[in-house]
Length: 382
Ligand SMILES: *Cc1c(COP(=O)(O)O)cnc(C)c1O
Image (cartoon, rainbow, N blue to C red; front, side, top):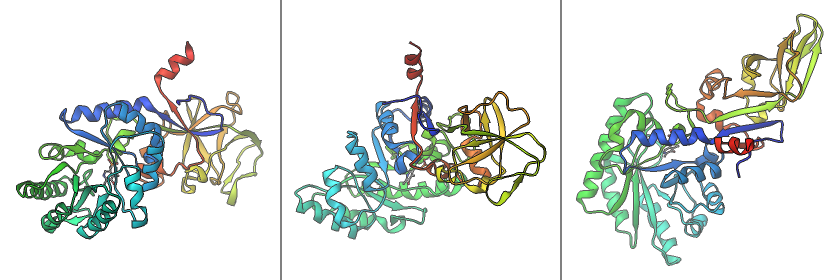
């Protein structure tokens, strides 16, 4: 399952040990009975949903969450049988798949819950859902202020099992006061729901930043948290306790000794100033997830030294200046574009005005993911 060598000249290395350490750190922040729903949408933020989910479940994560049906089916087809929540909307022709692959859909209104439950009844099963409440995200969900009646209506649908009710923070990383107001409103709604005797297994609101900034999001009445970003080791505000888990790597494809006046790449934005400047060609470009806005800005690591990208980043290549003395660098040497010893995902993102989520999600499908862990290294040595 876990390989530690790529046979392609560009790959994303995923450090499973880092993900494990991040999860253990998150657990250490939470009360022992707090359940964890690992968020693995968008192919685990680009890290590979199947291997990441396997690891998370092995470490005691109870639930997984994805955005859409295809992501959920991918996990089921890989043999993962944990409870699985779908955040996004599902259209009625796909309702059958919710049952077939045993997932919890999110319901956003009574109308939607009713339509869904009819389809379940038709197939002879009880609907099992999570209800989404909008407590201040301004996106999907029943508005918190008048949610009680609608939740009650949903609860009265024949056979309806409410496995969870949840809400989401838009600003748990940078607006604590707003987030606390949200939590307060949602907590009050939960009290009302309980007072009406409506049976609900789980209440959850916290994402990664909530776990670091908002203790009220993981204490009574909350039973579960939904971390994503922090498991992969990134944060919107510097957090030294967690470790980046993805490094984008490649191998030098060619080294060209250039002459004064020659230019490098499209639009000829880089001109060679002195004879003998060595330009390395790295086979990774914007189709792999490196935006062209980083042209002439990004530095990559080769053998523990950083070298600047020169000239415009192409679809499949970028060029790097090795200066006059590249003798130690050869074709086939490993290059780190971001991660380990090069720009962090956060810094890479800052350079191109992207949040860390975008950086790892943008590493395209054609880039193979290679999983490393200490055990493998031991095996390789033995
Ligand atoms: C993506 C997402 C999360 C995880 O958020 P992070 O900031 O990555 O921890 C949690 N809940 C919902 C509804 C989400 O869409």
